[in-house]
Length: 568
Image (cartoon, rainbow, N blue to C red):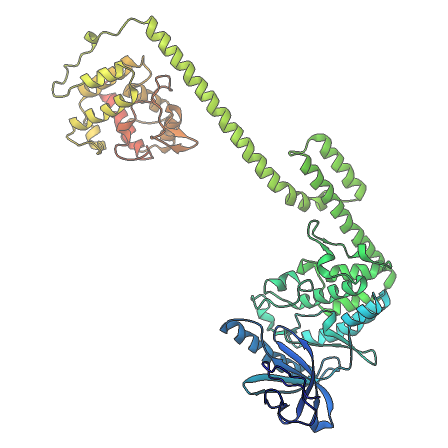
């Protein structure tokens, strides 16, 4: 029978072996005037595969691959075409020099379609063999590894990564020899380009984690070959052999016959998720299969396996303890210590485990504690405020009213202090603070929103400063006023010379409540009378700015200088 290669033919298998054109669609049946397809034997993401005969070689059987991608979009089709051509190049390079890789017979384009023709491997793939004969035993797996690992090393030495090793792509010839087929996903790399992200390709379950994100390495093929062995040992799909909740392989649970510790150790290392913990080359796996001194090496492998299992056991115990609550109390810590000792694990061994599991818990615990602390501070401040208000109300009830007649507001007739006096008397600290700012601006001839320069402050009239200060001191019972602020500033190391003293200024800000958590504030200033000494006046220190800042230091120093000269 002749099989028509036209993808749109409605009856491709209806032709006799002697005709040259399809009786259904009229398409040419011979490729390159010599290759005749006889039946379709496969179909994948890149196209279809056909069993064929070469009429130039006495009808010798061969395989035709037709490029017919399922990918959509121009970029995807171009990439698939590039990979299809690359398979031909790689087979030409690898197949004619190694008996366990199919040989390329031809690559060409006909009727705007790409084709490659390769050697036919007469045999059964391992997926079919598994379905027909059941699970492989240990001897069969070891024989498989010893047969394919040299092939894999040969491929890697040619700087090629296969990227699709699985039972379907391993064929056993009639003489028992294993052949690695389907290089359609293979990638040629330079040693310096292994870290470059490439195309994501491969078969789910058999693909390594790094290959799944486009960063395949030679160790990725080691991983895929290891997973192939696990599938052949268990007859269970790879995705079911890995427990994502525990992040560990559970292939041993599906074994019908127990395998030796040596083979189990080798397979575990081949399928390590972390690339650095995996075998880095096929030669390393072969050396593990054929140790020069078998018994000591087996003992070391047993010890290593037991050590890793003990680490996992401790990690599980710690996880259970953390689920019960954090931070861990002394009883739980002592219990974990005893478990650690019984497992023979050193303190140094458990540090990475504890860092990984405890760090998120500690961060969350610290956030909760900080929130509790902030709430406690808020409650304390609110209680203090309410208590101070009660005391102030009681004090006002028991104290006789303050007489306006005692206030000498006639010292400077060009300035009206009446509104300032009335606001202070009423305990309206916020408006009084702003009125002080306006009064001082008015004297130096500036408008609202501006600020008083240091040179203006150094020459500010003593009479005006004295009047403003006396009103603040009187109606705040000595807690507020410029003279109160000067006293505090000098006590913390400030000097009345108009210079900048950063340390004293910040200390002053902390004491009078202008700095909170090492940050300058203004909008958050509260205007209750019970606040710390020197808290007010405040507005004149910053003018139109949003906070005091370090610039207020020179202003305070200049004010102190003027107050000293005015005997305030």
